[in-house]
Image (cartoon, rainbow, N blue to C red; front, side, top):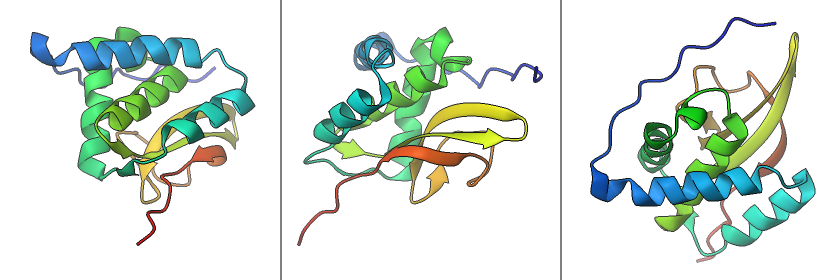
Length: 141
């Protein structure tokens, strides 16, 4: 068993900015129960029409989710990553949503990233091997 991770810093949002992250967290809790293939199809559908997220946009969404949910601030990485992606989508952008593993010791994880870099994660790119990803759709010019 690995040592418990410290909770990330949780900043309080003003009341008028809490509704969207709370809704995203609630919807993400339901979506986290989907089988992986169904979840992936749903997220692929949802990303359509969104611009690629910037690091700042993705980090702002992740911080908002963590600020309204102690569960997402803790070990619920799947719910947190889905909620952050949903909140990004609500704002018209899409990060790359990822799930993956490391093997020594084995650990599964879910996160969002922008341009190949994990957003708000305490580990560097490449720490986990992605198994499922839902990147932004390439914008045709």
